[in-house]
Image (cartoon, rainbow, N blue to C red; front, top):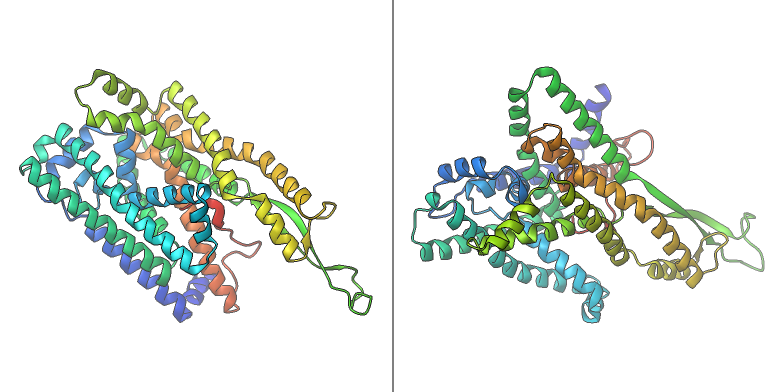
Length: 446
């Protein structure tokens, strides 16, 4: 306890770090306050009651968890920052496929600024599409909660949701620039965490105390395992050659000036494969919202919404493994790594520079991607397993999937940034052995 108190004192004794923490907390508080502003023409109480009665799982339940309940309240932040995340993913995929966008990416800060502008413009289109689907769902399933004429309600609600999402995009940029951690990730994580206390309270009141304690202990074990998996790294040793002076090495240590390593994470793709897989699994249910009178789409939407079925999870695992390989191939380019090593005078012991180095890195990456993909799939289906053994849907969502990966990833990133500030000021880090590793740049948008 004494060490913890001293660490907190060290953290708040650094003016820049203290200001960043307070600024971040202020903006996140504003976000939670704005999430209770309701769309024009909606009776929030009726909507919340109907949502709790009819949508305990599936796409709407998951989206509601990401935005801290704003979806079920009919808030102007009902879509949260997810349209921006979707736009970022699309731009990232297009950048890997289009030479013009690749050229922009290599232009440094100016290119990055243009790509960010394209992402924000695309966000507007994504909001209009996703917002229209949300309003169609409201009109078909929760008509009693709407108090305005359909045309006026659609225009007012769409504009309000667009304003709310773009406000969150602005807020995320401010947190990233002047606050602590990644703004988009923090906004999603806060929305998820906001749903945890109600889930715990509901689980505690609906189960005997011993059962509840066992469930909480199981959640702690799962969190520990996910942290270990996210921190797992395959290190490829790298040596950097020392230049010869006068035909000899100046220090007598041979041709090796220094040693380092290339860290290849077990789950290099991060949470992105689950997001891609869920997008495909939720697609039939989303399309069914536009065709409420079609028996085919209603049946397809119902089947793909039952995330506890064996068939659903087998298909889900297959998609996750497929997208893990796909996204890892896009995010990590062995040729680029080999070229960077060659330019900096680095080499892998026993491997020739150039193409042999790229082939070796690609081989190692391929070997660790399969266990990483299976581990990611295991995390993704944990909520279904917990639901099958009797845990409520609201609490089961915290046992796996994107929920736990985003929360743990955000915590690790934030702690890593805090530790960097402490070490720069010559304070002891947050951990006495090793170092906290956040998500690398190749870990995804989140």
